Image (cartoon, rainbow, N blue to C red):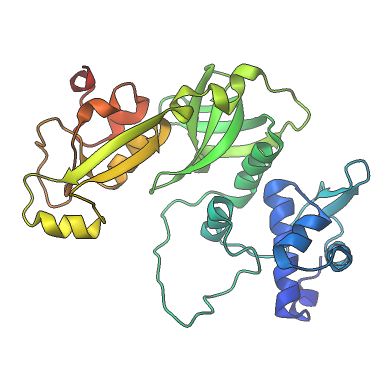
Amino acid sequence: MSTDRLQDLGHAQRDRMAYIELRLWFVGEIRRQDLASRFGIQTAAATRDLGLYKEMAPSNIEYDGRSKTYVIGQDFRPLFDFPAERVLTWLAEGFGDGEPVRSRTGITCDIPNKLGQPDLSTLAGITRAISHKCPVRIKYHSVENGQSEREIVPFALLDTGLRWHTRAFDRKSGEFRDFVLTRIQDPMVLKDAPVEAHERSDQDIQWTRIVELELVPHPDQSRPEITKLDYGMRDGVLNMKLRAATAGYVLRKWSVDCSPDHSLRGPEYRLWLKDHLALYGVKNAILAPGYVAGNAKA
């Protein structure tokens, strides 16, 4: 592989090389049309860029004549040094596909890094499995059970605000669960392995169910008008629609008092869940501050 040659390329072409690498590593494939659409270039130019990338990193990319798709090579080694946070942002929002560079706007925007970032090789294995809708065999470390080997069928990434998870069907427990990315090791994508109907995301009730929450200024906090401004409330209410599988994480992240009598004290509790019954049946509601399972029954 030739990182020296990258330095001889113009910035625009380096961006396209970086995009090719991102797609290969984290999606597992790229088509000429993907490159042409992303950068507004002709397919002939996209073909030349893919050829150039192959010259620089021949072990990273292979051409599948059956699908007319460029796929990740068996001995892939990245040319670019991508920060984990940037890759996760790209996966989540599609921003900043090109070469990793500092902000070009001239405006300083300092975003503190999370303490725990997933290993990119691990992340890539999970995202390729998601892209190809196939299982992945992993080693997983849990607080309760230590290390175990299992097969999961991942279908989404989830940012809890503190760490990244993948939502997946777990063949060991027979349930849909969240797996912390930093606890996953040695993912092996089982690209041609079948996925049963009950393992697909549309069978995950906690994922498909949408809960509607009404958040209001905490009754025991002074200056509720400031809370209304901070959270852009209309008529004193912030309405949120969340997947049941994410609700507990969001409520914890924003320190929302979910006790029925707004009993939590402290300056961090500026919001209160107006109707605690809205969390009935939400499995991860136990993460929400002040939530008590018995209080969520009608």
